[in-house]
Amino acid sequence: MSKKPRIAVLGSINMDLVARCSRLPLPGETVIASSFSEVSGGKGANQAVAAARLGAYVTMVGRVGDDALASRLRANLDREGIDTTFVLETEQCPSGIAIVAVEQSGENSIIVVPGANGRLDLADVTSAAGVIRASDVLVLQLEIPIEAVLAAITLARKSGVQVILDPAPAPSQFPGELFEVDVICPNQSEASALLGRDIESVAEAQQAALELTRRGVKHAIVTLGAQGAVASDGQHVHWFEPFAIKPIDTTAAGDAFAGAFAVRWAEQESMTEAVRYACAAGAIAASRAGAQPALPSREEINELLERVSDDTRD
Image (cartoon, rainbow, N blue to C red; front, side, top):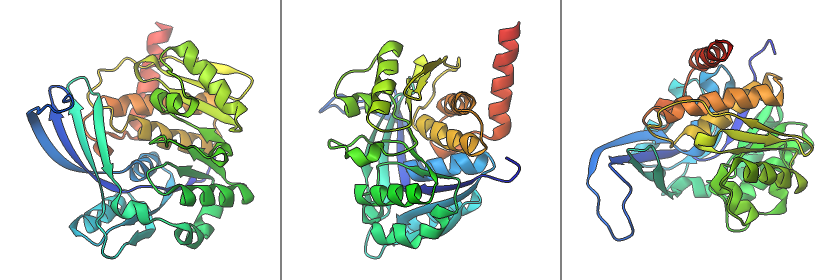
């Protein structure tokens, strides 16, 4: 694709309050953290930044509050070159926050307080209809009201816009209409929640991907962290080997994956190439601390892919 892909992201915008500790606390336990930081995040904003850093023209559709965090969150998106025309201020409402604990292994535990994200509604989707229709790809997650997500899916489908859904956090009730998308990309815990059974091995993930396509989605990708990822088009299933990295913080790995996949898919790469590219993006993000600070550039992803290719030839 010669022109920049146009990506619309409808989703959450949060400030992440991040504590790093030796291990995650057990219920009722207090653990002393080694550091604390405030980092711009939210699954929607993270995916928008991931796509923008890879050269896409990105429009963010979402809400911030009317508190001190709002200007910082918007300014961060502006610095990344993201169109924030449809990032609206919500009166008498705090911005969304996420309380993130990260242990030495890179695993994390997150509590999200939606704030203004919970006020995103059908009117917001309608006001952004023009930019959604003009996009190559619409990217969605589930940290905003499900009604807004469903309305955006309907709008995009009527307009011939490809839709990618990151079903996180996985809801207790998953409307069947959410499967009416082009790509769904849960991690293994989210896929487990969607299908009501544990998914731990690559073989189990392959069966899960096939089952998700049988429920209506055209393509299903299940990410498995250290075990790589699997993808299915309903007929074939492909396993993507993991990249050898030292995990530091997995907070934004899934968002890096979704943003990178959206860009390469919009650039009309094959599903296989787009997933491989996205796996590289997720691996790089997991090897760094923080959410948006960990998101890679196109040059970094290409370098990793070339290095792995050279190692394979050797």
